Image 1 (cartoon, helix red, strand yellow):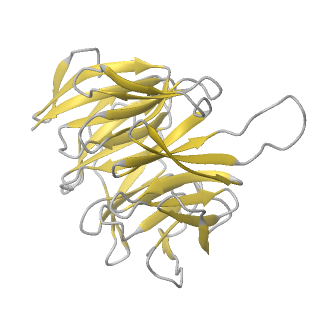
Image 2 (tube, rainbow, N blue to C red):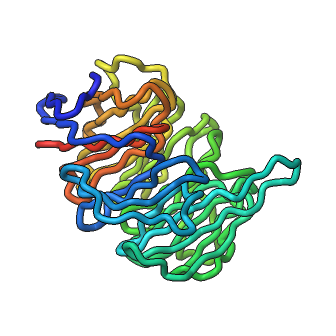
Length: 313
């Protein structure tokens, strides 16, 4: 289904409404109060803005030092921003990625640089920021301090996820996946799957997990370290697109997934592992899906388009 502005429809008894959309948007997340923090514009001309999630009204805009912003990570009342390195026309290798910290519309003054940046994820409860590099290092920055290395994890990290309680930190490089306990000083890695390519990974509450092996979505039991049965995707319009991003609702009952092709977001019953329905957001990759803390709204970010939906259940 193509979701138009203000359109309402049902997915297996759940009412979904497209509230608003924003063009030229790259990344976004829900703030604790339900507002949206959005990165908009191409790196070099970007701005970070705060929006009213109910209708898209702008509350504030950040531009200073953030014109190259492209990735946002929530850290409770604060958030971290990844900014692309400066580029030129020479053959000189690109510089490090700048990580800057903000509290609402105020810079905290804490920044550092990361070489070979790959991905990052934040723990809202502790303020810890976990960073994965394309060299395979897992780094941690606590309260905005310079990062230290937790472990050498793989050949390169392309995506990361953190469980709701901050207990499990997961990452994948599009061919392999693993997780570790951030509080474990040994940095022991637990491999996921049985050699299949893992394209997406998500952790929910109480040891609940899910992983994508291309277009196949499976459950993952964190406590038993066991890959479960595949989700039932009967009724899916396009079933051959790789899944790249996953997000559980806070109660663990619903799961969102976004595809690498055709810009589709799928909504799943996470407990009984079946498809509730799908929404066509944009004819391109889905870069992020996320629920707000109430589970009443969810967002989808694609390459150049950002859309928010209200969910009634």
